Image (cartoon, rainbow, N blue to C red):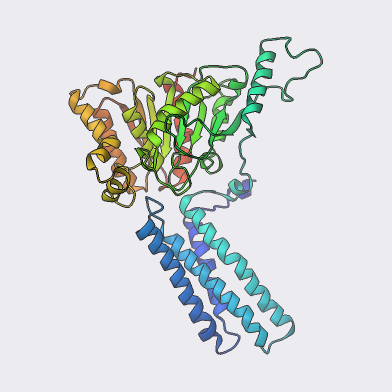
Length: 452
């Protein structure tokens, strides 16, 4: 396994290997079997690759802007080379029909073309992994371990059994066995939270329940996790491996850890609500009222603001600060990882038009910057409404845009009376930063949320 850990799937080495492999595939496929192959196979394949890669870049980066922070150009280059290779491989296979070569050589050429058809798209996918740091090593790819997932009904049944066992109750009866494990373990529940106040239609949330929950603990603190765009609740446990960090924390704290609720604040992977109440959905109301009320009711969580934190990445990081800035009476702690100074889509003007009907004042009021600034001015740089509120701003040491925005928000937060800090972790706008940032923040969160 140590050998697998030593095989990097990200970084400059992986970057160079992928591009080198794509170029070698293209050069191999361009070796003509017939004189007319270069004209009939190469030119059309190249034009198609340029059109698809260039057209996709234009639509995603200039027209739709599906990814707010932009898509790394390496992905488009790798995709273009992969499409070019696929076109060449198809042309190569088609040319074999009329090729004069026979026997073993023809079989080898066909096998090479088929192998290229498989390897080229894999290289393009691997470049996505390099850019977004999804799996840092071969070991992480092979050993990706998801959380134990159970239904809400099963969670409540397990909690009842373990609570009875821990109390030494006779409720189970002499012939009834408790859970098979010798002690309760954490689990993740997927369920749709109430939207009675917001009427916001969204996908189910994922709720991490620590071992102590199944022993009957009540009034546990809560961390709400908000993903970016594109993204969803599952990302926190698949790419972010939040459950592994939480399990490690629980193991060193006698099974104690917070309840963690990963929510979908956008309604779908690529939809962007800006985490505000607008015609795109009443997301602020959903988080500040529906999520809080339902989690407190379903999981007997603590209702006090000091026991609630919200953490987010990218657009979710922007959301985390917005929620705390507007609702310090409900959330007293936040972690803003790689967030933005202003909530926006393609441009601020577009956000004002599309989400607020052209009302610039409503847009300003919805963000965190103006709220923090007004509080600092109104309270003479004193604590004011944010007394007892604390937060972390986390950026990658190569993510220049996030560094500029988060440093500014950190200054505004401290001026408004929030006990905030700015931290950098190695990496860009990727899960390399967010995985490390969340795991590193758990001890700090435990102190904030009063987990003994």
